[in-house]
Image (cartoon, rainbow, N blue to C red; front, side, top):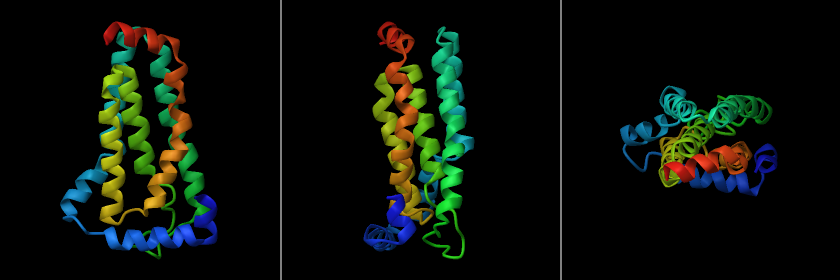
Length: 175
């Protein structure tokens, strides 16, 4: 995806055509509300509460891993935004839209919170991340590839709960 964005290849051109047909296909207040789910002021408190819960339950390492995963988001996203300098769907003069920081934030925060509290919340984390990315695309804040790139970029950050033995043990107790 990144290569296609950099060279403005066929996938990037298709991405732009699809995006143009989707922007403003729903009322703006609705797409803005959805996209705001990926804002740090919304997603970070959710993760912070889940981290506090995990610490209270004696799962300090899992909470630390979740915090480190969130801290890694800007370290991964910002350099890619600067390197690709992709213009926005509605602001062709602006740059730095690839990948989507809001999608990355939503994904790490909501999946991290779900892993820390209960794996039964994973479908809800999927829903919140999908709604965020969809809102960003429908509002015209991001191209579809921006959101997909963030998902691909963040998958390795979410690997920690799978290998966290304390997490598995605690989930057996709480589930």
